[in-house]
Image (cartoon, rainbow, N blue to C red; front, side):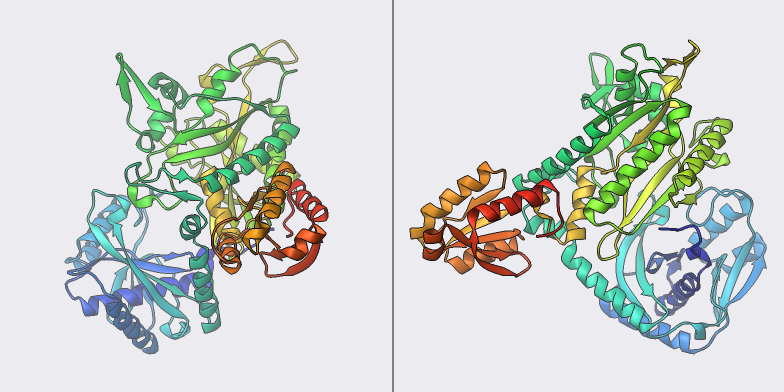
Length: 603
């Protein structure tokens, strides 16, 4: 997975094509709505978008007309021409465009870019013109619209979007499009989207009876149904086994705490907007916890520590609560209640590399288990401008710990990419991006280095020289949260979970009521062997029972009739459609037990 030599997306031809199409789309929209106000239109993964303030809501028919006009513009073979202008010149060009004027003012002050992100230095103000359309833009673009394949792009949808992502600002209409170099690439992408719809974890979660949301409970607060509860138990069992072998100790902490704890940890100044508001009891303010680490620091501090005790690895599947904005909630991927595969490792600097790489090895072990063969380890670092604001104000330790992470990853032979200004407030981190079986990207989890907060809690150990020393803390969550992991696995497997993870592993189906007793006997034997088996003794006919099991994507269906009763066998139907008659019960049970024991991906 060597990502270091890959071309940056921002430097690619595809990026320029998509960026140019966003301008072409804006031209087509303004021709349709001359009174429209336009904002920004960047390329994004797999396509582009542009946000507009329009006099009415767009319809699917509007998108067809806009797309048709875009192809006409592309056929015009217009050059994209860049020109650097002064702020005053730019204001004259965009005199009737309030959003552009706001951007120009920010650029002139050198404060933020078009996305509202802080700027390192005052930028040039530039415009791009093609034909008679002009836009405020820093580029890059194609040289000429003839470099765009007119059959390789498509407008996809319209969605609401707040100006600069702030709910206090006006709501705009965002038009999404996708673009590729060839029609074949476009067709493959559209086919992938169709497959993704079938695999959408929200749909599968409902169809397979895994989880629900309820308005009376609240948005972003999932309710796990019994079948979902089984998946969670299996994931937690996996984590406990692996972590026990790796020397972790399990702890438990409360769901809320006094405000003082988060003030001491430094989380409140940095994370207040993501925390639920406090409750006050007997004159004391309490918060529900958005993270577990301050509690684990208290557990570490509960007794004196020696270098002989280190490393200390404290693990907990603790439930945390974060106030995600309503517009950002998305199924199980963005929720407000989450159970995190959390742990904190307290170690000396000498132990850091070994411990950090051991966590990376956990990731790789889980990737192999779940069949994840595409991933990126991303080193997220600080930015100097954020010191004392977004980040702990100690540049020396930032540079030191960032280099420690780089060195560990290189020495471990683990490929990684870097992303500036994405660190945690207390230290650098490795963020893990993974792709599902259909190529859909997910942010799974993180491996963070904390050089700041242990000192805030006066965490120490006595080193070999008899002196007090502050440990480093590694925050890690290889299995992410139950919510995000189950959401990912639903889409990754399309609901066809491996046997060990399947809520129902065997459905026993009697052909007639006269075979119910044998089916019930098999259910008892299989359950006693540790297999999740159920005999379907309902009134439906056999074919309807088979169909019900197929809809729930149960790995094995054991059909039993006169022949099977007399020979103590089953007629086996597997989820993949394969069949096998006259399978001895004992042999089948042993095979299923082996699949479960080894957590095999095979049926």
